[in-house]
Image (cartoon, rainbow, N blue to C red):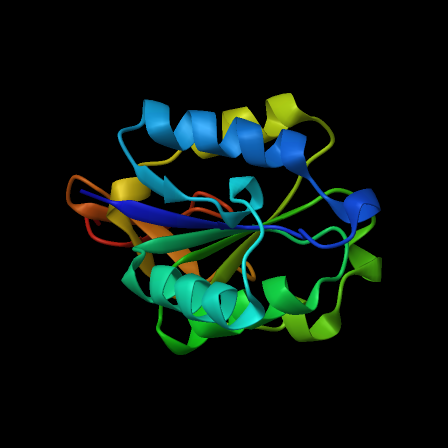
Length: 165
């Protein structure tokens, strides 16, 4: 069974993205994916949170993060995902030029800009999330691909990366 880790700001109430997280959890569960979403857990000691979240990132098959507002915790989860070569789907609502260049230049990720929660739903439903892999696309900045039959497609631009030629 595929497991996903959902990352988004938690501490500052004005930065939370609970609507985004609710939509993502619904879509992932509809697809049969087990989701760990710390946004919906109660308070705990910082050491407990650190250990729990690191463990869950490491055992997940992919990480989905909402990165519109900077968050140190989300940044740490993104780096864990990159270091462990997990496909990383990053969602951003706003001007991409305002997004951290460190995040924009990171390997292992694909960046999705969304205007509405319907966009988030459509994007997540559009992929076989159980067949994602980290692979740099030659045609765009994406580093995430999906396997469809005998072909590997970039999830960023849809280009065929390999197979079926």
